[in-house]
Length: 125
Image (cartoon, rainbow, N blue to C red; front, side, top):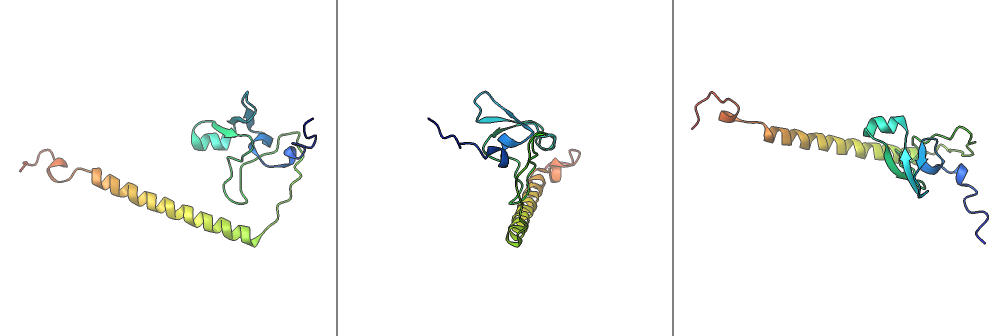
């Protein structure tokens, strides 16, 4: 006989499977996220694993939404340590984005025509 308590707390846990936007595939383990915010950001519906929380944006931030008939039994504790970790993650992400913009600018500058290439009417050496 299987464990009668297996999955008993599943409705209380934030995961794709317990989110209103999750549409399970036939295997029951994966599915599609139909969250409009995520669709707008990605331009498509993401394939996600039911046990994970694909839309997690930080230690204490996500786009999870309870299904209409669910009762959320979760307490979020405001923690200075979590807030510091979130700030550090945001700083690293901002730094990476800044470096990416720098690299993209270098690539664009590298690809721009110079000299005779830039002006086809100028005499070529």
